[in-house]
Amino acid sequence: MDDQPTVLANEAALPPTERRLHRALLDAVIAKGVVPAADALAAAVAIDPDALPEHLGALARADYLAFDGAGRLTCLYPFSAVPTPHVVVIGGERRFAMCSLDALGVAAMLGRPIEIESSCAACGTPIGIAVQPGVVASVHPVGTVVVVKRASDAPAADTCCAFTVFACGPAHASDLIARTPETSVVDPSMALSAGEALFGNLLGAVLPATRSRVRWPSREVGAGRPSGALPPP
Image 1 (cartoon, rainbow, N blue to C red):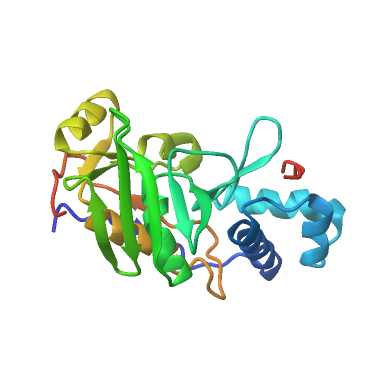
Image 2 (image 1 turned 90 degrees about the horizontal axis):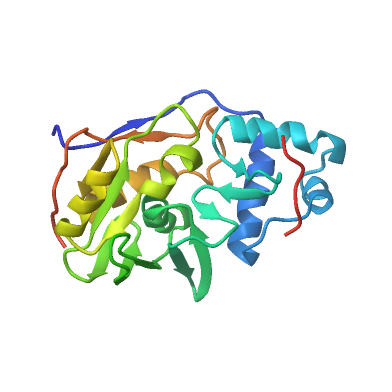
């Protein structure tokens, strides 16, 4: 269908060291909600601490993580190491997601149910979504939709995440896309499919050379069914 997004994937793989490092970072954020200190992280993956910036830089260039202006690792898709409007509740533990789409992909990545606590980016109305792998189990308020930003070649944290949000209904979604070029409105089920395509295999044995991206149709789709600081690269 023309309304379906296109997932751009890379069949090449990053070296095993980068894969181990990425997995150690994700495991730490999932378990404790914080990024490990540099020395602890280097020890966990058995690499020279002096080489850590090089390996982190490789992951950043592949768009698996991002640093802020102070050199702190703040983005580890789908998670954020700093507060965002999108909270993912995993077995009672609260973690922040980079955007609405990333939050929806967490259940498939972990293979377990999660809950999302967010709000309408236009009016602040609380939004709650229960997600199981492969299905949006419930959405409140009914009529909630997802505003998505078309992918570019730049890091998603810089170009997409701030504009990939929830809206409490089509009217407020239309207000949001009127303010931002290259955005579309999709229902939660379609957004879930895209999120699962991005993150469903993120904990697998192979880490692609670049992170997968989603390119959305350029027109509005419409509503459907209901820390220790690390060294910069």
